[in-house]
Image (cartoon, rainbow, N blue to C red; front, side, top):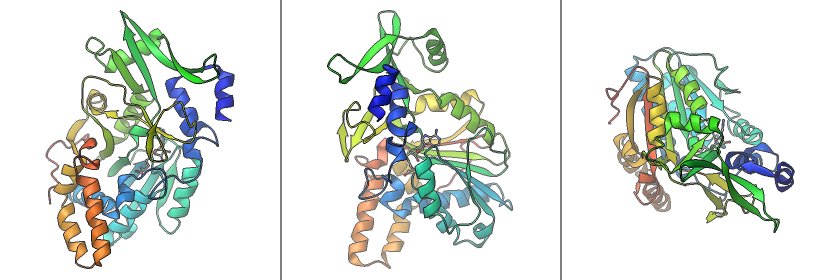
Length: 354
Ligand SMILES: C[S@@+](CC[C@H](N)C(=O)[O-])C[C@H]1O[C@@H](n2cnc3c(N)ncnc32)[C@H](O)[C@@H]1O
């Protein structure tokens, strides 16, 4: 069915093709059954172990202390997947009396079917809300905006320079009736957009999500209120140079993005250099940019795990050791995943080392 839609369009820019594959139709990847967790297609950090979300909850408590314990706290999570991280954060915070009734937790989710799954998984929680878009979200003080693997799931455009001209990547059906790529001269409009963010003198290839700038502007707007902060965890690098990082994962293995349409997850590696640049353009401060491993260790994940193990059986202890390795090891999620913290009010003076 997605293939039929592509045929009808004849030719699609890469980001629209990815949108068709992941979001646009009932048959698109994120609109179908639950893909998350062990046994699903891929395992994100919140599914590796609840200790991940527990650490985020500790970070939230430290921020709440920093802003002098206001009477209400608002949390907005972007792209919650199946809702595991939100559920575990709410449960961890709930161990402290204040957080049982004074926290409002908001979710922003694009996929209808994931929204249903989130509502089911969180049906017993109080003070939780789903919002339709950032623009209409009423500005609030004491707002923490969170995301885990939110940016890396956005559909991207790609541009390549040949000679002095820029070309955009498209997807179309070739004469053999197979999906294939083709580059077409880029529209001037697109070039104007990318040159605002990327240095076209040093780059011969550009990859970016069309909605990125709008998203960052909307997030930045929300951060202008008092006591607000943004934390995102995504896989990617910080570099002035853009690379082709789009990949598809089908049944836990890398695959060709033109195959298994609607059946594979398509992601790219977030370019944090440009993400940070967009926030700075909006006069926001960089609080921290670090690896997932460093962030979690500063919050005391190893000490927390050692403590938790005292009450666990041997096999559960081994599982926790395995989860820690997966979250922290540089060759697993520890280094490739980065943590970016941005604020209007605070810069590096918000320390959260335990
Ligand atoms: C890779 S998943 C990560 C899910 C979850 N945060 C986790 O760590 O397991 C990306 C999530 O972002 C959502 N998403 C993608 N684009 C979005 C958008 N523009 N607005 C809201 N949600 C979006 C997807 O539907 C999905 O829930």
